[in-house]
Image (cartoon, rainbow, N blue to C red; front, top):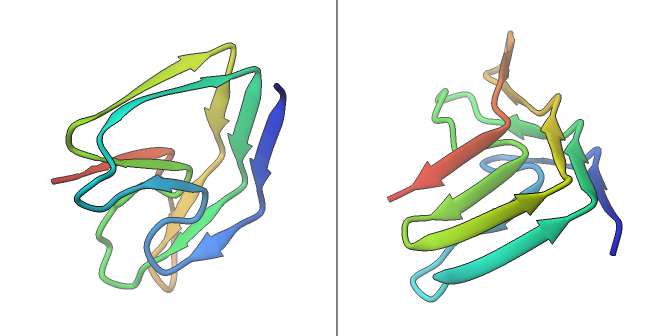
Length: 86
């Protein structure tokens, strides 16, 4: 399955988020692209604009691109392709 997650924007995680107390286990993402997503967070807390997971989640990326996702703190774009929440 080919998937593109692109052009999303949110206050904490712009692309794909696996969060919450029950978001544990394994996830495989294959032949996909996660890019061009924006985490608009003025507090500069880097959750991961492209891909973010809660502690306890295993993510297996196969032939997948995670690139070009940014944290926007109100004035500057910072690279923020992935993040972990504990």
